[in-house]
Image (tube, rainbow, N blue to C red; front, top):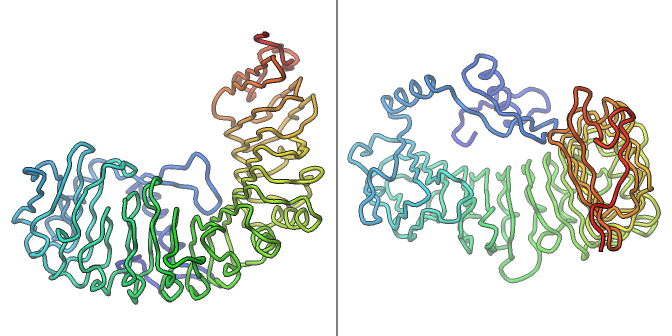
Length: 461
């Protein structure tokens, strides 16, 4: 998309360029040119998390790409001398897309030869383990694109010396980097569409509060941020924004979300500073154009009447795909299932809650694939009826002291991936449950015929 390979004229009604790209990818898979890898936990919109190419096709494409000077891939270990990477003369002036990869133990202090590359459109410094902290460490002065003002894509662990001059940049990724501050000039790039600021998890990146002026921005990925000068990050001017990932109520203005009229994917974390209006925005179905919403709520008070209304409204939103509630105050019972509730919810997590739940109500959610319950109030007997939890793959239960008996009927939890073992504590006693796979799904090992598991003490002081 950043280089214009995805054509606007291929867009159908209510389609985005991302939808067109996914359609292209699906067509390639149907022609057996690529292999799509299905995610373990997937949403209706994101069923695949990666793709691969066949060995023979990879060799053919690589050879053709280099022959046509479409792409050049460099293994840093072959050209590394005293921690300095000297680009081979073959890079020269004919390469328009350059990717440099390295092993986890190959330290690089600088790259020589970039200043000689003309008309470079794409530059990527990649680690073979994307999440590794020991990234390619470069001084800003070692990345020079004086001859490549038409650069469209930049992926690296540091910023180039004159990043503000790359006015044609469409895609900028600092993912897993240790960059501590985003220059204000980046926010002045008139054509930037994707900005990925998910730096290494031990770092906080400081941002100027002018991102809202980036009128062409379509995809914004954040993590731990701090706004320079204080205050919260403004978002209200991003009229074309389609993806907003991991904003937090402590550092961003939640009230700006309804103003993002093109927003389709939202991931947000809220903590105890979130007020009534912000909770209404997040848990009520205000943004009708949203396709996927992931909400994590921590240490908030939902015990008041409006809080429970907002929670019930949020569960009926067709865009809600993931909900995590941790250490919140919720009065009474978790909302019971009604027709149309949680149509696309694939992940639900309730942790350290003083709330009553009926687990069998969750078994009615049609798309639920991951369920985590920790420290909630339950009845002493749990019965998983036949055909309940039709899509469940992951199940995590802990600190359920009231649970004494669990009965799993045939064809319940039929897609649960692994045998489940969990310990519970009650005073000085500990209990555990064992579920073993069978042709009908999962059974308890205490009594195979009745499929009933009675919790029994495994140790006692």
